[in-house]
Each structure stands twice: as structure tokens, then as C-alpha cells.
Image (cartoon, rainbow, N blue to C red; front, side, top):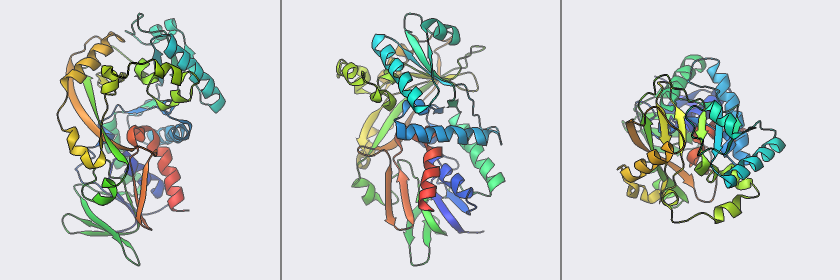
Length: 384
């Protein structure tokens, strides 16, 4: 078995996999070391929404690059990628003003968006409540994926078509560099060697370089999500983002009215305390994924977030969702929490323990959208 490569990527989630993908496109030999039988972290515990529209300009550009990459890969194999767009539904005059301002910003950035009237929204999205909707902003290029299925299919595609080697159930417990190469040592004592190592370990900080992470400005976010039972013949196309999303997402912070509107909000509200905003996305089986919430801890205190699900948060999400869309059923078949890391002062965490070992993590909630474009940029930088 070959254990010598041009590049070893530690972590088989979306960020690590896209780093591997872009390295493969440079005709490098690449191996992924994934500690589980398949990715189990933030990559598979999210909505599967690829939404550059929610990001600041830098990451919107990475996200737009990702859209092209997802479409290119979907043309090679069915990765569950659907181009059915995203819509932000405004619930009042303030949110309507923000989507109109973002529409003008998008025009200047040459990113396609379409303002929808209240009646156009209601006609397009079955069950959308008239007493909630004021209007909408639609992004036709944006994508949906079924995350857990997509990452497994992407791994298979890259193994079959590009020669990627993936070692599942393989935990890297040490990485180091000597005068000639980089070495990754696994829990079972095997050694893998490469010219470079990229570590994309998500929020798992306890094994490799714990001191680096404990001293960093990384924080860990716990979110809660729910999934209804299948909705029968009901169809809800695209990614549905609502008023609380408009008030939360980075792209809207570039709007002229944002600061004034935010200053009028109640800082002690339940949605502020638990970082709740309401999103909908229909999965391939017809069920609808709902969420989500945000609770925070410093990276060194990740265990403080616990493993329990706060039922008060779930009940709040369901009750708010019912005010927005009348689904055929709100009977819940599944609930879960996800954890991801992000930086307090930077948009991603990058650190080189040695010249050819690169830690890249803390992408936050931008992973599904931004990883494709960012990884292309980062691989080009590392191999400049």
C-alpha cells in the first residue's frame, strides 16, 4: 500500500475534500486521512444550502466560484446538486428596505438577483403565508445539495475519476516535518509521507496541535436543526431564508439601513439569546429541514456546549416556522445538533506549524458555500 504522496489532507469534510480536489487538478498525488467511516462533522449537519448571497463580497466571490465547481462536478455524476435558487422573504418594511438595498448592491457586483413582489412570492412558494410575506429577493443561480449524501458521492467520484486515495477510520495523531518530507502518524502506528500536509480538522482540536488552538481566537458554534417527515406531493423549491436571516447575514451588513434597523432590535429577545433564524430546505425525500440556532464557546471550552438538545429552541423554531409557511405537516422525524468552528477576528483560521504543514479551519458557517472557491485560491497560493 502506497503511503507516500505529494499532499496529505487531514480531514475528509467539505473543506478538506475541496483542497484535495484542486490539488488533484494540478496532477498531484493526494491522500485524505479521515478518522471516521465517513465525514460526521459540520459537513453533514447543515442545510446543504450553497448561498453566496448571504456573504460579504470577498466570500461571495469564493461562493460564486463554488457554484461553478459544484455545477462542473454535478455534470460528471449525480451529487444531489440542484440549481433551484435561494429567496429571502421580508416580513416587514425594514426587511423589505434591506432586500431592495441588497438588490442594488448585487447589480453593482454583477451578481444576478430578482426582486419579487408579495404576490409573486406567494404564487411561487406554496404555503407561504400572506400575513408574513412583504416581498422577496431571489437568487436564481444558487444551489441546494443533500449534504451527507453529497460528500460521500464526491469522495467516490474523486476516487474513481481523479485517483484520490482516501483512508477512512484513520486518525492522525501527529504531524511533523523533517529536512526532506512531512509525516503523518496515525493511531495504529502507520506513517504517511508527503511534500505537504493540509489539516482541515473542523472543530476537532484535541489531537493535533492542542496548544495552538487553545491559544487561538477560535470559537465553536453549536447549532440545532430539525427535519420533518416527508411532505407528500408538496414541493418547496430552493433555499428559503426569512426575515431573521436578513437581519443576520453578512451581506445585508453592507446595506445603508442595516445599522439603524439593527439598533431597534431587542437585544434580550429569545432569538438573540440563542442566535435563531428560520430557514427551510426540502430534501430529496420530500421532508423539510428547519433551523437553526447558534450557541458559542471558546475553542478550549468546546465541551461546555454539551451534547443535549434544548427543546425550548426546537419549539421556538417550529412555532416561528409555522408563522411563515403552512407545510402539510410539521411532524418531526429527526433532530440533531452540529458544531463548527470560526474565528472571532478573522474570516478563517490559518497557521503553519512548519513551512509545509498548513492548518486551515474555522471557516464557520461558510463551509458548504465557500469551500470550493476558497480551496482553489488556497491551493494556488500554497503551490505558487
